[in-house]
Image 1 (cartoon, rainbow, N blue to C red):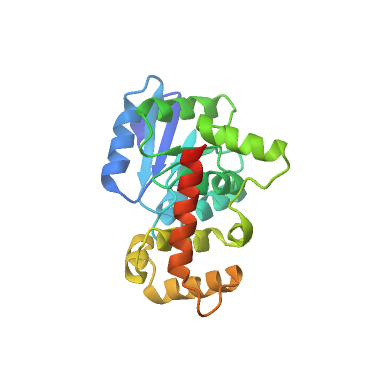
Image 2: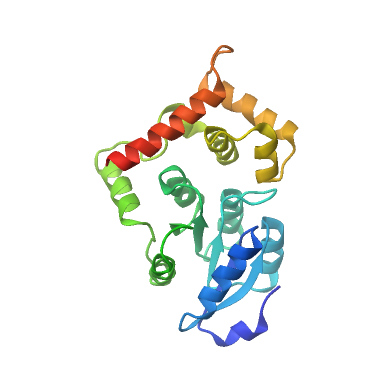
Length: 229
């Protein structure tokens, strides 16, 4: 729920994350920053949109993996409903896999959850100044890709997966089972199977080609590519 005490701070930050400990940790960190306060927290997209109707924060911090409607879909909703509200993504997902998708959806920055606290603060302040907040590595990756005319997004047909399909694809690549993916995304196993079918079709995988093996190999190659740079 919106926090009336936060109205005295110059910069009010709202947090959308389905993990209570993460929400509370970010809230405590924000409350200890000079000039900042936590406006409210929410555990899913539906609760966040309801809070936004009555209390617009200065910046909205969003996780990608949320129950029901995921963070990327929420960002698109916010861009349509509140185009002037900047969004910062704070996620456990590798920035090389998701940062560009987040920016394309309308986010103003991307910080990984294992980044130092200073990176989170710097991202908030950079967005307040009108900038885009990315790690140095990700900024260079995107700038080099655009300067060379290459597509900075995921390669090949992976680029054509929807945000939810890509989320499922990455979880498959991490070795998650259908039931584990369903539990993580708070969707039914049947819905996961539908996403898997669509992924296979878009990637043009034959019946004899294992989606799991393909996804694991792709995720591992992306990680090796990142580390080799």
